[in-house]
Length: 136
Image (cartoon, helix red, strand yellow):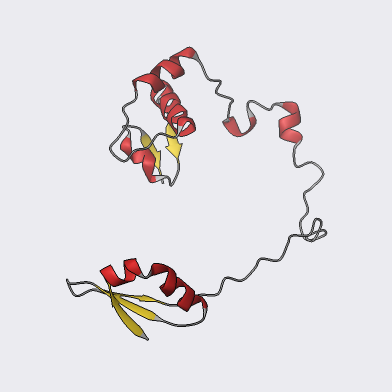
């Protein structure tokens, strides 16, 4: 196992990676005392998926989607919320937080929550950048 300074490691990166590929380990040290160990890590190839490999392991009852057939917009008190001009205007007024969150779909969901006083159920931390009600 060889030891390199950060500067030497930067200059010898291709060599270090080649050595790691061959199974060698290297330690890279910095002036402030911390160190990083570069070790070879094999990556296992994933087996290709085979269509139908779970056949017979998953089933649904024949009446699974009956509520949607009879009343698709009221099932379990959920409804379809169409995008409106008000929502688009609200998106346009949303600030871009320092976190850099710019996902347009997330921002539309946030705008709809603001317009209709809705609570969003998500674990996405980016939603905490906005003044909406959120359940994690």
